[in-house]
Structures are given as C-alpha cells and as structure tokens.
Length: 315
Image (cartoon, rainbow, N blue to C red; front, side):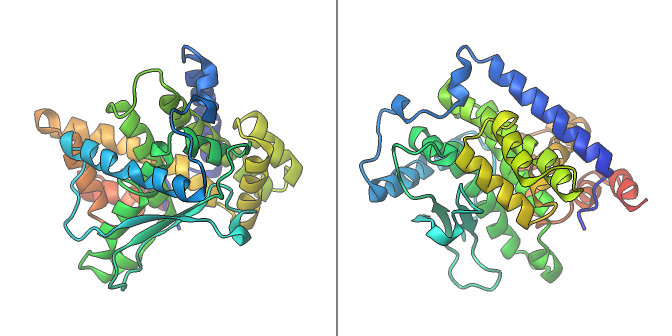
C-alpha cells in the first residue's frame, strides 16, 4: 500500500508531464546527442570485464568526497562496503541494467552489492554504454547516496516496524531524486554528457509510468510497451524489451520511481519554506532518510506535522 495522495489518473498524468519535461530538457542541451550515452566520448574505455567492474568502483570515493565536502548527507560510521559484481545471465531478460542487493536487516555483514551487465564495448544496451561513458549517475542511484546508504540506515533503526517496512515509492523515489540532486548541486560539468545521461535516465523513468498503467489495464500489448520505451523513453531495443518485461512481471513497481521523486521534491519545497533561514539541504536529506522506508505521505506528516497528504491518500 503506497498511500499516494494521487489517484490513478493523476499518476498517469504525472508520468506524461515528467516525460514531456525531460524530453524538453534534453533539447536544451547545446548538443542533444549528449543524452545518448556514447563510449566513444570516454577518455578511459575498460579493456575487459574486470576493468569494467573496477572502473565502477573507482568513482565511489570521488562521490563520497563530494557529498561530504558539500554537506549533502551524513554517512554513518557503520556503513559497509559497496561492491560491484557481474550480473548473472539468468537475470538479464528482466533486469537489463542490473540490480542492487542491500545488506539484510539481520545480516552481521553490512556490505552491499550492485550487479552490472556483462561488459561489451560494442553493445547497444543503454546501461552498458552509460556505464562506460560515466558510471556515476547509476552508481549514485544504486550505491551512495542512493539505495545502499538509505537501506543501510533503515536496517539500523531501533524500531522493528520501520526496519522491516519497505515502501517502494520511498526507496526508488529517493534513489532517483539523488541522481538529479547530484547534478544540480554540481557533481558534473555544465552541459556535459554526464548531465545528458541524468536527463535520459529521468526521461525513461517517466516513460515507465505510461507502460505500467497501460500494460496492466490491458490497453497496450507487450510490443507497444517496447516501442513506447524506445520512442518516448529514448532506449535501445534490448533495454526497452528488458524494461517492458520487468514491467509485465511486477505490476505497479515501475510507477514508484518518478512518483516517489515527485513526492520528495514536493516535500523538499515545503520543508524549506518551514525552515526559512535555517534551511540546509543536507539536514533535509538526513531527516528524510532517518525514518526508514515509510510511505512518503507518512514521512511528510512526521517532518512537517502536516497530515494533508496522508488524509488525501486515505480518502
């Protein structure tokens, strides 16, 4: 139960609005092709699978330093190691971009893992090409400050219910929010391919809403979903097919990313207004993720003492 302050039509409209926005933002780049990952633009193309894994891991320290220097979020002392591993082939059909395994709630080992696709510099796969050119946008989503950080903090909460509850809208919304937050706070050069990648990542996440809604209401066939990911979302056929398969296998999961990001952005604006001159972005992030993976309408109630979103969800 996501406890969204939106009905089904509003969720669909949000997807359309965000899709239109990010397609337009790509068009504002000095070279719109910067949104299409191109390994040829990379100064360091990995030579093999091992080098590909190491290239991912090598950027993690840089991102942590950026977060600390700019006071964007507090990293707890118990945070474990975040490792990059190769995606097992069995998962490729429904997880073309790989997936992340956080430490378990009761694990004594605080390590987490991100399984990335098999390296192929000639691949047309969006995720592989993006990772070769610059792995940081996706690394930030899956690792720090994204899933790994947020879920590690949730695992250490004293309240058992908050440790156990895993609201997908919060989890994916936070990770997607982090992608653009890092861009807007200056991690990447202005008008760079890295910024273009962030816009394309947001664009196809918005397209996921249309696919999720139309597949599971029976309005679209699987092939229509694939074509939508390609034409509206800007993905290649391999990635689009995997995305559509993932949507078909898990109803409503694909709406969680953009809906969650929208709720966090809305909460951020309200939080800033309430804090006034005392507002600090890093404090907002700490306050947001210290509550575990709760529905964002409940988190808004906790942070702002405002139950209006929760009331709307319960109507």
